[in-house]
Image 1 (cartoon, rainbow, N blue to C red):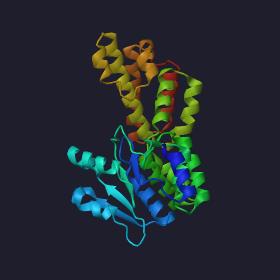
Image 2 (image 1 turned 90 degrees about the vertical axis):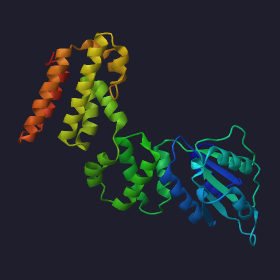
Image 3 (image 1 turned 120 degrees about the horizontal axis):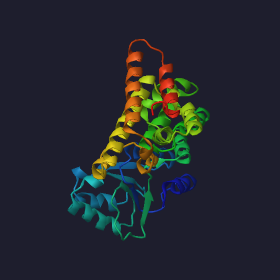
Image 4 (image 1 turned 180 degrees about the vertical axis):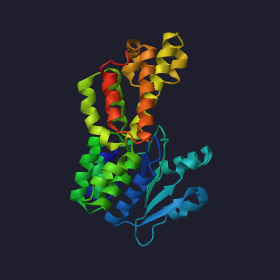
Length: 316
């Protein structure tokens, strides 16, 4: 089951339905799991015992996991499951496959057995949190919901693909900042996340010389970064574009693939053929002059001049 419908059921039923809950993802979302356990403890009114598996052998824990005390059901959170040696991890899988209670066991594992017991619930946690999941995480904090929702709306205008642990961190910022969000978005957000899709599509419009598309995206992201960042960004883009074009023109396609990181697909597929090496070199040299000017008290409008000259073909 995906995490969002499972969280919805959890909030309605106020209980975990199965004796064994396996959380899984491609990477371990530490902050998300930590906040989820806190949420369960607070809202489900269920005692939680956290066990570090590296400190215990399975045989030592069986009695604890199988003994009921005064009719109280305990939720056991098993830490570091994926850090176990393969043999011990397989022993735990075999044991959990037949576990029926009386308590509930929750653990995270990147690896899930092909055959899963009917007493298991497996919940898939995504690598990235969408807006709905981010709003759900906000509800776990139980305060400043109004300003938190405004924060999340702004956040997903900036970047649509946010790693799930980063989303937890940013929601915490939303709760702390309250109504004072403007400074966070202008000065801090770009230090926490890079708008990968925004920068990728911006670069695609740049090398495609799609002026209308470029300036629409430029107006959305340009103010999130200082001019020095943009000089570094465009400088790297041009350097990689030059090297990729030069190697490709010489038939060295395997070597070209090694340096195509962050270049847009449209450039790699066909736009590189539209450029002479001299044009890319002149554009890079002009950007070097912009950098020199800014470091010596020049005006940041020279960066806009660079963009205008490139999109109009003045370096060709």
